[in-house]
Picture 1 (cartoon, rainbow, N blue to C red):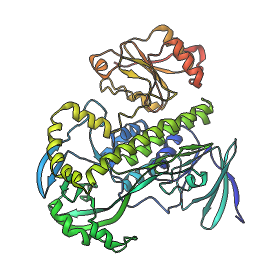
Picture 2: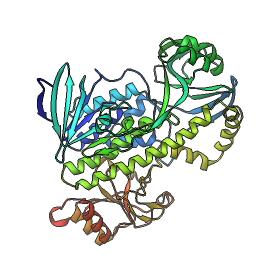
Picture 3: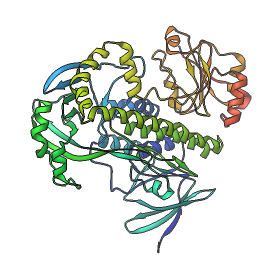
Picture 4: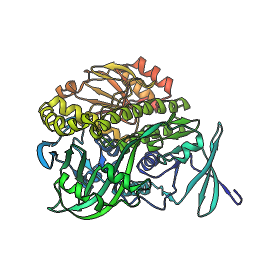
Length: 523
């Protein structure tokens, strides 16, 4: 455009400052990578939107040092209540649902606006400020970099960067500019969401309200006492509202919502209606440009997975970009981002689609599920420890693994390459992950050849005492596990020879003076 200025950006330009873009920027900044982050909005979001922060996300935040602050600002949900036809039929206590599985074995409600403010503040402490009111209007790339055209206040700027990351949501300008398809569809049902104050005081529990012709959810928004209400808009009201939905208010829904949920709403702080989409981009990468978060995948809100999945994308991409930008790995490392994350996105969309259709279906099957199966089946299954653990592992995202990744190899005990590193509380084997570095873990004793190879590679070697807890977690005694910077096992059962071959392939590790092993004992 006329009058466009030119500039050179830091190595990585991020478009979009929602949770995904903010976490990506923060991860890069903490690793010493220069980053610039822009967003067309004038400031952070003011609506609560995504509500649940899963255990795996908190584990990533622990690596960065602020997980405990997030937990303190959020609300732990102690139980879920099932109500059918206005009457309570079951109460299932969460407690520490994933005790022993994670340092954060619970369900945490933390509204997105508070969440984003926390991330913006952490990013500022890392020396990076979000450039609000700055939109991407075009981009091009070649083999050495990306040229992005940015607009702010009517002025244009053409900046160049080594890599560009599109974290700019479902209507991603980055994705559109790259010509990447976004196949999928939209569910027929119309939903409402409201943040409201409910008579009778603050409710910390999650309530699921089931009815023959719909369902509703109520969960705590924030410690100030607001509740999040979510549910189906009756078909007659949805038809009356028309395509713009502009005339629909909470007052239209109140006569149905209050008896279904057994509540009286005293005040509404925020209300909106929306339709749910399910889409996955055809690719998460085009040359030096990447997609993450809603720019690459959107799906039903079942299980509170969307925002957490985007944050998982950001963590996966950040360490790989950091290694390549710093020259500690070749560009081939970046080839592993798309296959690892797009496979999970496709699986997640298929899973949440089935659950969503089953629960919200208008037919006889949906009515039977809501009024009979769920009220009776869930409490019965809750009595089995294996069912509770399976639910936590799935919803919390600690089960996400990359067994088919080219980065994953080997097996020792029940732990194989691509698995999330199993958690042990005593001694705390997640504590060393705060270094954000490649590292070796051994439960038992490390052999001299392995120690020597770790020293040559400059890889920290953490030796933990062998214990029954380590065996139960799936570790093999005296076996070595090469752990990625994001806390996933890369090479299980590493020996000096296989470790040397692996790091040679991926360019992992730095030479240390004298080849002294970087070893620590954990007692």
